[in-house]
Length: 363
Ligand code: HEC
Ligand SMILES: [Cu+2]
Image (cartoon, rainbow, N blue to C red; front, side, top):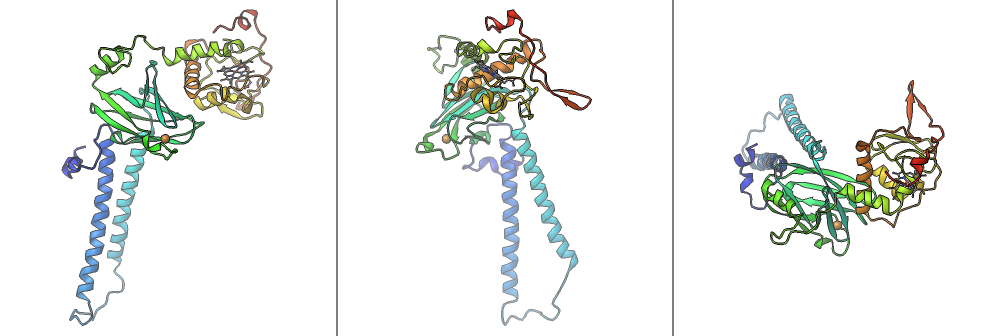
């Protein structure tokens, strides 16, 4: 934008570095708001002082023609600040929308906040604690959840801050522009060691980032982590098989359980008639507390996993179930809502199992 250089914002030492694509625009908006505030403050204070001086008691100022109304003046001082105020509003709203509307090509990174640390997991499976390593020039989406209380993921240099809530995924995004190390903070008081819930964001050039990936996420050039980690989806599949989900959920609907293939993004009807869209939050709550939302056409036989799975495991399971949406032929599902002639048609009985699908629990 360049305006920051014009007004000297880049030289103000107490500003954090501007290391993401929208950092600069946030600063410019901030400084313009400041500038306008100071300008109008100055106008009011100076007028006040000057007029008080001119019309002080015993001064010889001309008081013979007091002005009672001056429409032009009143309109001007109402309309000009109103336009300026609306301009700031529109500008701020646009920036806010840019900051929270994740671009489609953004690569996902999972963030789990817990008292008192940040746990980061990349989709390729690389994990980090209290550090976040990203390259410049590529958008990343952060999908965040808390394992306990409300935290807030804050990278001042990116002008990114997002509340991290228990029980509900939130997301934001950024694209880093400058290699370097930046602060990462928790910006929501979350208990005794809140002030120590900090970390470092390592922004690498694309080449260095590739090297970091080749070393499987190790910072030490001489000490590559030996094993290529599993991707989040592979990890999810492994959990799916080891904790027993696969005993009930197969690639087809059975009376025992609905298929989870091609489920993501669909509309599902619950036993109480409610219609819900399958998103991350839907999957998460259906895994941890399945009896709160029972899919129409099924019994409440699914075990409750609350307390038995960590948020990291749930993230992996959700990623795996989401990936089933693309890797298999869409199958008609028992509880799926069908809309015919504008009317919701209730699902009938779940389809009859075929022997090959109910046995073995393989997906
Ligand atoms: C004992 C069998 C059983 C096991 C084990 C089981 N489920 Fe389920 N699951 C069900 C049944 C039955 C339903 C449908 C009724 C309901 O919503 O609770 C269901 C529903 C679901 C839904 C909602 C599906 C939809 O169509 O809306 C998801 C997601 C799910 N299960 C995931 C899992 C995961 C992940 C695991 C393993 C951690 C698991 N289930 C383990 C039986 C099971
Ligand atoms: Cu915190």
